[in-house]
Image (cartoon, rainbow, N blue to C red; front, side):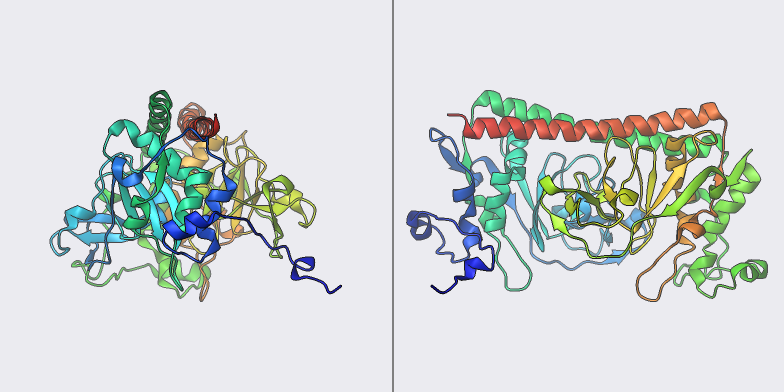
Length: 468
């Protein structure tokens, strides 16, 4: 008997009711029907359309006028940036030149759903996003009843909700979903008690994240205060073009003879100002290599991705800034030198390739994850510097601009561990360092608690959806 194709390849298959085909959109892509097969909802549950409990708003492309000054514009956040703990922004759009710019601004507790490219990323608008402009690549879901915010958010974020959302994507090259696709989603009606508890858990989770950001902001302010450092915004730089039509700055010939670098960004006046201020104003300072070990571990090799049960979380440069990292898992048996890739508590990770200078503190988040070769490990000497304090400094403007000055590469920007180890680190008293470090640790504890609360909400939702 001849062999079948399934003898050579694993083919995923399932059955779906013909009713779903005839009553639906006559979609022939199998993914559209997967949620009917993978999840068994309690039979007693009734459903209603998402459009009955929430308003879904989407926009098409719009003309953007980018400017440099935040005084005359608002930040524009992309659908990938909205998933970040502290969103960077695509740019600043002019409030005078962008037609009807206010309709792109989002209000607190609006649910955002990425609808182009990567489909189904979900976040809730908190203080980090409120009153900022969000690109057309994110749909706005605004529950009619504020008590349904946590329920709608949790449902769309659940495995069941995600399978429905991703099943509705369309597009030959770039995947898309539209407001109409979300409007017709069937939402199971669960008990009022469960809805109330879900709302409490999700809003509390995002309140924890807001509180964490406040702790980190306070830590950054204390870094400046305890080291007698002025804020960069108040610093005036000498420039050949005071109108800022072209960014042209002067540098000293002595600086050129250090590394003989011809790339202008190496002579970034902000980096030079950071070093000058630290050396002239801070009571004590050292180079980073004096207080910490900066190492590059891991190797460029084929990554064998596996399911969660047979691997360890693989941490990329993108993951370290996400609210909830979308981990992939690498094999525990087929990965060379895996033990060298594992990160530990109190280490600091800095992205060294592509988008440079992203910094994260390993504290109740990434312990025992395998970190990409694109992340430099900074291992502080706890006898010389508080680990949390060192993170707070390296993630500040004074640390960030020192890291960036060393970037190099013709296509993809890079920095090395030897280069960043030359950064100048101000060192206040041990008591002051600990105060700052404790704020950082409290912030990361709050972020961990926020994830735990969301996980608790998902457990509660699953029970409400499946319990007969």
